[in-house]
Length: 378
Image 1 (cartoon, rainbow, N blue to C red):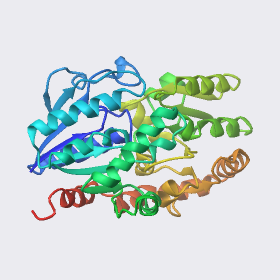
Image 2: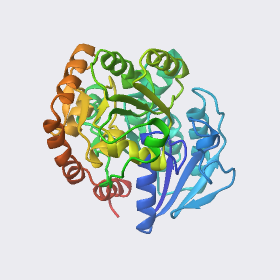
Image 3: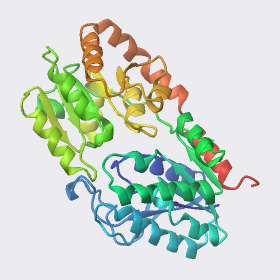
Image 4: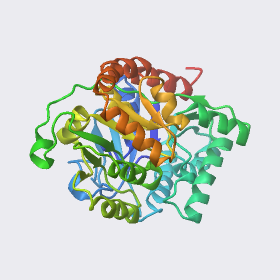
């Protein structure tokens, strides 16, 4: 089967959850003998060109773990990169005539109707209700909502990552969609080394947030709550901005008054693994999510996790983590304080985290279920 992926920034990359998902799906499908093409955006990593991989900013096609990667024309400006890259990727994919085109995220789904009109089977994965994100202006929000509506009306199959969004499509579009959550593999914890040299961090000596520094992630709640805590633990905020430079600067400004707060910027590789491996508690205080890959990864490293009580997080963690009331700084502070003062509870949650999450979410299962939607009669 010939499969095309459209909507990610680039692979290999950790710029966001979409990139992780597309890399996992495409490489695993290629390993099973499928013919897979991934259409990369041209341009640099959103965190800066120093984070580009050896291949993923190439202007020429290349092969990555069996996946044929084709860079496409991209206007690298806020709000235009996804629009232009998905449009040009769709034109190239239509010319190549794959058996199925798999679109990822709402904005890139706008040109999906072109493939639909040309009689090519289309599948859309809605990673979250992106039009609700605070970083977007009026036009961008409208465009994202238009992509969502295009997927609902034109895609042969629609995949969502949470039961909450599944119900949303039923209520809003009278469309039955498939709930196929992301997968995760067990991760092997590693000792603190780079993070000790770089930031003075030691095992269980810090609380960790790891993700994009954007308003809907609720990092400002975490900073405000932490500053009210009487603790010698540090707060590590790891991640870069994503079309939200003003918000990132506001977080940096808020952090300057507390020397316990460490901002690492975008992180990957050994440093990323060490941050996950040695945190006392991982916190995800989001107002809005799809299905957060960073939360799955944190659990796979055996972390005690604290999340907001939004359905997209609560569905993932069940009773194997702790939640607080979304947007409630006082509740977040009190819950963090309780965990800091109860290391036995933290240890118990850590002990069962990796087994729980890897038993619940499997990439092999995700691939099986996704392939079944591509050509249901194969």
